[in-house]
Length: 211
Image (tube, rainbow, N blue to C red):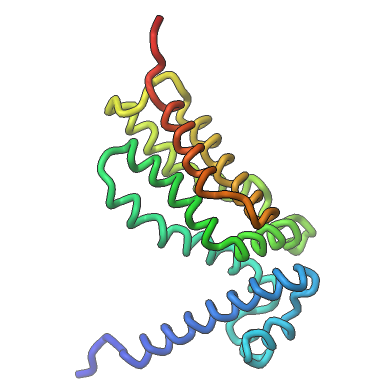
């Protein structure tokens, strides 16, 4: 009787995923060198050392490749952050680790972040609308942060003088703003910025002193 597990299929899936990531990495580099408009499939294939047909096998076209470039960055960010956040005790420490690891990931992937910004500003759907509008997916991004803040308030680890949704939005704005700065300026000091922002939101989420 044949096992339901198929080692050959698993290996093929692993190889295909590795190839997709290689193509996305080449797309990032080409965008950084030639801009979004100059990032043709032919140029990306040349950078990756493969044929254009290989890209077409893995992606339906440039639009899908660019879409996956954005999605893959968020997946990679989650893979980097999740174990670090899960390793600390206490909701306040988890919040500060969430902020710090977000900024660490951005700092370590500046070229990718800059490419992502170009994709977000240029990629459009069939109706001509921006594929990644500012509001797209925002709720999904901030909801875990909102839940952390609500839980922290319920457990008295955070103060109750702030709106968790507004606070979560402010935290995300501070992180996304840092990404934009890092994309614009090679000498932006992310380490100093991270220390500053962690201190700001540590204070902002504490109980206000009563006079």
